Length: 158
Image (cartoon, rainbow, N blue to C red; front, side, top):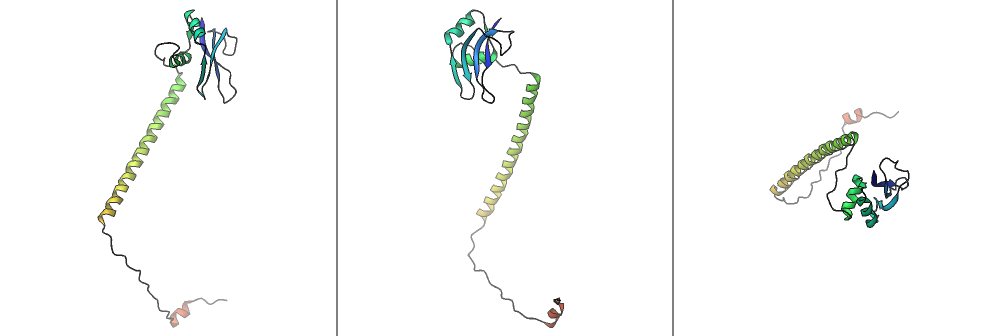
């Protein structure tokens, strides 16, 4: 059975994909019948040979889920996007991420509520007080009186 699918050609940390027509059971890096386009996910640059894609689809080739979604979004074929299948490990990771995100979000919401309440209290106290006349601070002068008892308590330097 023929498939239209991605074939990775990019170097490490710089993904790039060819869209190729190939046998379903062939290995991902093995031979292909024809190159039908390319896709660069970082730049979203897509080049498609629309006529050849339609030709292979008319011959009975099936598009993989991701290629199908790409062709629908680019308007090459009509239809709805297909939900991409995920294995159980990926689904579990996504659920855990959602749960932690939800708990973090609730913590943030509670923290913002608390800060908002304290801000309201501060605003209320500031508004309730009437401005008082500014007073100059009084300077208290201490008298330097030394008594005989104070002299006795001081340690003698040896």
